Image 1 (cartoon, helix red, strand yellow):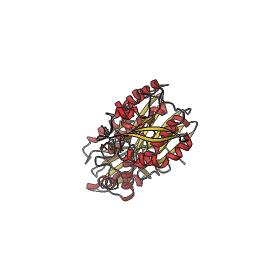
Image 2 (cartoon, rainbow, N blue to C red):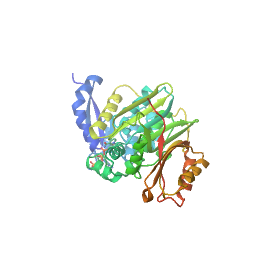
Image 3 (spheres, rainbow, N blue to C red):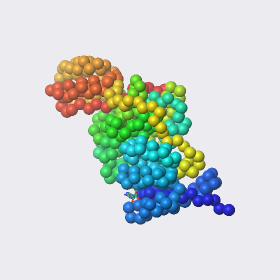
Image 4 (cartoon, protein in one colour):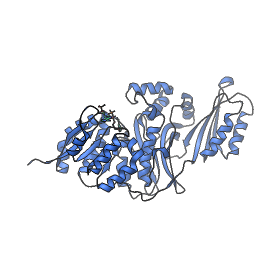
Length: 408
Ligand SMILES: NC(=O)c1ccc[n+]([C@@H]2O[C@H](COP(=O)([O-])OP(=O)(O)OC[C@H]3O[C@@H](n4cnc5c(N)ncnc54)[C@H](OP(=O)(O)O)[C@@H]3O)[C@@H](O)[C@H]2O)c1
């Protein structure tokens, strides 16, 4: 007797949707052996084919791989209201409308699964929702954008400029023709909103995530970093601070030995810290059609077996954006006495203490680079504003955060 079919309505047939169809055909037999149901695609919707209402009517589960907010939101809501489980890879949708969608999933008793929305095939959603459900997470650090990690890795490896590394990433397919959301940090901000939501049981909208990208990073910064024993990454952080929550994305220097310092190329990695577990790091390919499709298929199989929970708001932490950070400060200065003393005095007024200083070059090429110990970001940036107007500066100062912890 042949197994009962499990019908999948596939919305979107691009990079991930196409790879999903191929993978499903390859694995259908194995999934049937595990679940007792035979998965099959019962309808496909693109801009040029398929009708959503018909697909919904004839399926048991909807896979949403259209991307963007509209019409994805409408389709996902309609699917859940009609009692269908939904699997999606759409980080934009969840970071904007997650609360509405999770509420709808709870109300209609269906699953909304989204492993592929953050870090591709790295199973961080499952780990946060299931394995670490009882852990009191203190902090998450993540490299959640492969494009920027590739660019920064290439700049560090070859000494090339940001523009050359970006062009290389586009040639190799690691960056899209329009890479703005990757390089300006917004893509990573969406993913951090989702991770923070799960780890801290607090609704986090993408607009509550402060973010900054990598467009301003220069080959010079990389050279100094290497001299100071630091590596540069675009880091997403979500952390508990005095009973509040801070979620942000920015370039940050890491000391060698930090679990994320050795993550190079288009890879993603996430470190979860909690007193009970110390620290767990997961890493792997963060994007790509077949890799993302594999995470989507994992969710489909889970939805075919027993139920998983959709997150409830058990606590709602206040979200703050002014936090303590250590900083690297790079200044192109005139080569004359008193420069270091004046900068140090302004930093001292702000309560910043200097950890290390490097002075390089002479005359027109004189530069001053410092690393300062952690202080409130607002105080540091106020000091930088004062420094920026000093007459011996030849260009605006550049500041990049430093993650101070040393791991052994
Ligand atoms: N690509 C990756 O590596 C990756 C990694 C992680 C997550 N994701 C996420 O996966 C999702 C899909 O990404 P993708 O790279 O596969 O996108 P894609 O290649 O651009 O494919 C999008 C698909 O959706 C269809 N579509 C777009 N607008 C539609 C509309 N209004 N009505 C019906 N169909 C519509 C397109 O139709 P046409 O074929 O007619 O154009 C296309 O088939 C996104 O949420 C993305 O963020 C992607």
